[in-house]
Length: 394
Ligand code: ADP
Image 1 (spheres, rainbow, N blue to C red):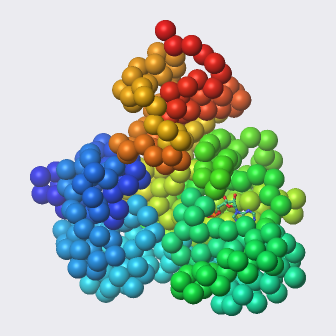
Image 2 (image 1 turned 120 degrees about the horizontal axis):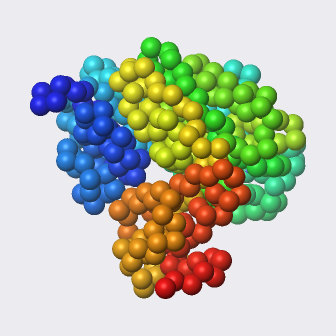
Image 3 (image 1 turned 180 degrees about the vertical axis):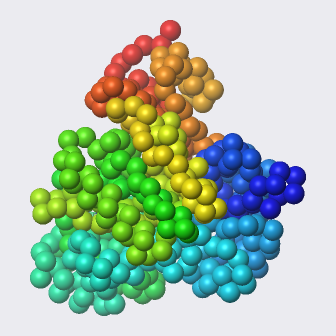
């Protein structure tokens, strides 16, 4: 409890953009997020006052950080599971707890658990030797998808193996380096969805509308809310699936369930137990943003309404251009706001590097295609200082 404000202190491990935007949501709740950050120039460290510098793999740093926090939560999945158990044994309130979070940390643990629950997942197998991959490919066909069970993100840690020879080139080296691996069938996916929900310790659940996520080179570039041209039944069953996963795993906080849409129905790809890129649209497009909802959930407040506030909401990520444009960010914003006064810009205060997520733009509209075009143009302009449609600046 912060004696100055009488409000609880939430400590978030990790100082990335998710912590930055959670801090933003903490302010109207009378709070100020406490952040454990690796560097004082991380996105959240630039804006929050209560920043502790330390590493999330250092148990002593985690213990010191947790002192004085009412609850501990996360901006990423990279805290070692054994450290989380140690904190719980110390009496720290950790949300989501380690028994839930391990399913977002380890893809093999997650696949096994969901399969045990009878939930739809792609065929998969653990890989401890090259033979595991070649036998899997022989059974399910090539290409197959090899994944690092832990530590991957934004497509890093995912390898498409087209032939047994490509497996031979990749697998032994990874095994030698000690990377825990699994192999999956390469699913013929029509598109990708995300079902975002939140769950409180009390057991209350809330679901946002199902969204479509658009990936490029393994990175999410756009989110369309609600997912266009989806049968109501399918959207509802995806939301129910996500709420069930949250319940079965005992998740506290926001849970994102990434889904593949296939001819045979939806399959779960992966889980994230924190605010997620697929929920950034909620900052401007829903009655309650995912960041506020995450705080409400970890503090066991009643959850907020998840209704969208416009018929179509599009989020486009601002991804660093191959070369940083000469025109500075400040001037790019001038031109952006001149052209699109209704675009909601969220920049993370990160240095621009090729392909790096440095911000996002939300656009609300009556029609999905128009909102999508505007969001796409705005995000590309912000990173490249080029209007994709040839628009001239004055
Ligand atoms: P990360 O944890 O790095 O986000 P994912 O497991 O989500 O990795 O995979 C990244 C992307 O690779 C997915 O969004 C999807 O486009 C593609 N992908 C992953 N697994 C499969 C699969 N089994 N079949 C087809 N495509 C896949």
